Image (cartoon, rainbow, N blue to C red; front, side, top):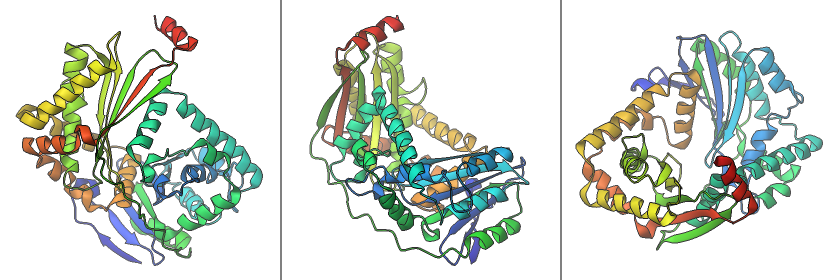
Length: 435
């Protein structure tokens, strides 16, 4: 195996990047401020890798990896975690699937034993598979039984015509219902192998000892085939798209999605600053106007995060009282036009940069947070993104903000979704309960 110490700023300071001969990337970082060790394994597979008609497989697989392996039978993974006083969980995104354990510093080996075994020997017992399918379907339906879940699903399906980001991470109901053990196993064997994974260990341990254990557990696992490369790219949007979703709520909601670039694109840093200027905190521009002065909404947000392929910049809001969606949308469009034309103030720019810096620093206090940061960025792009991130944010100018606002947050590049009442009796009951 090859190994090097990355010379870098604080987030990746003392991170050691090791690559086993089978392609497994290992990131280790000693943190001795508390006797905790977090280990995470990241597979470079998410809903973007799923074929049409087979959506939801990445998320379903996440569930199956807790249902038993050849070595750890049904229930043993959670029981071992509980007996050793630790915690575990997992999550799936468009771009990756990640699993983590946190244990006391004298018990970290348990996690590595489990991860090495379930990289190659997930059981896929037919009875467990069918039982878990019911759990996944229920989770899917629960997500749709919420106004935002339903609206955002429809919005993203309309914003993307070709790229798999149009599909829900949990999958479409019909696809999940007809999932089989065979197709799920084939997906597992295609994507779950060392050269498609990054193992991250952060906490109170000795690096040499941990690397020795990792090499012993994972080093003999053979490499797998190179995963299929993504060949689909979303064509440019050429005009506004609109949709209306009817639901059992009398509270109108608005969601607007603008196509935006992928991680580390030169415009992403200005877009992240713009999101903060617009709606992060009570001093933000949209909050001040729409919540404080006009009092047209009870909630407003602007969100833009990192993703492997070009994604979406979201603005969402929830109407207050009798104020209409048209009224809300008009205020948002007015503010965006103003920023595109005249930019933002020096105070707004400084405030946004300080908020991003503070969030970046304060949200990395736990070993789990640091493991998430390292694993996510290594999976999406590479650790050098972290090293230059705050510097890139600091270099954003007011002119950059105007440029990205005009270029991306314009009428021809947006999809507008409205959630309105379906007039059902439930809506009336909801309103009465609220009163």
